[in-house]
Length: 549
Ligand code: SF4
Image (cartoon, rainbow, N blue to C red):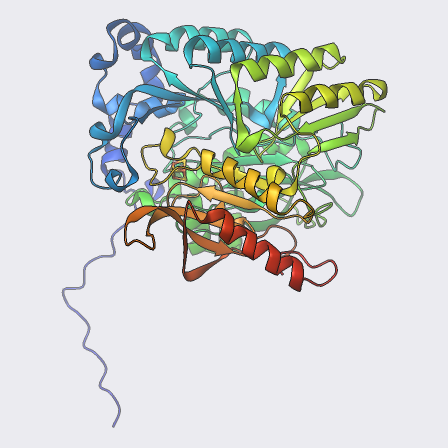
């Protein structure tokens, strides 16, 4: 007997929109959207200068404090001493301190020595000496009070830096290869495109209210160092069949709790078209992006629903008003590591020197030492990488040995162990209000232990540590990804620890790490756990096999 067809539901509701402006869903759809509608995040700058910095922390309107301040790279940091078990149960105001994390954007990561010294001075005078290099090439300061903000901005802006749209639902700091313009294998130099987008569109109300954060990468790096696979929009250097260098366009990558790799649209973008194509894709996101639920608002959800063909069609017909030609995919990345650590030749006969601070942790004093060392050795510029590392550029061949010695003497390793080189950690409970566990100190202790226990291990191996289920340190794409959570130790107590993900990777066949069901470790047992995994890998691997294989 066949199953009777279900009668049509006469009360079937019209399908609810997802808040796409282009389809007319303009009403406020959640508290953040309402806050953005009430006042553009960019407008908070003048209130900070005129009111809040003069009248102090208590004068700050909560909708600015917990909303629009992000449009200028400002988050309240976590009050010290609140353990991770309270993160989910306390109200935001109970978790937050009266001090701020401030994110300084450095699009493309390149800094002059003057810029580096200004950040170092601000760190020492206004941020208790803190300065972390993030995995998006920014520099983060902590302990900033509201009274200092106008002075910090004035000093940053005097040397061409800013915190504008460093956080918030905006085009945040854009990634670029730290070796742009100097690497011998570079496919194309993307600096001019980054500069033009920054000048035309950053701080521009046209794109200051996006559905969610929006991450850009533009690079012709042969090592694919800007991880185009997980940005919202990436331009990747390619050469077309006529030998013309341009860019391959990828959209819709992102990690967090619903990780997705970006998709190629299959188009060839000429260098001079990049800013308008960037604006077109950003416009699609602004107008068609989902604004009903914050958890479904990143561009990746729209790309996933539409598919690359429809996305390309809408981009071309509604935004660009012309068709882009088909183009080639990028060549496979050079080498197994994307970090630019070590001493390597530039195409002009000089060398670049990449070094590894511990999990991105620097200080105002160290930034000064880096600037001084670079200057003494004839270099005028440095760069941050997306692996929480730094590079000094333009070192003459006869000065390499000396600058390496100078950096190593202050624990900035130019020839680090695999563990120092490839371990990353997010901010964690020290400053982050969403954190459940500590990360930076745990990662640093892990590096020390692994260097002591496994001194001969030299294979590439990434270990990424997050303080919560978000993925600021990209745990899903690490060989060993550690997601901070509370776990139960062998005495039955709840303590800080990590859920293990294994086998994530970038490359020709990118893959997300697999969550190993039931496999968790306490922070205390972390070195033992990682040591076991690494020893097993070293024992079982075939010649040339990477960890993710
Ligand atoms: Fe904070 Fe979580 Fe991001 Fe770490 S991963 S910085 S704990 S939000």
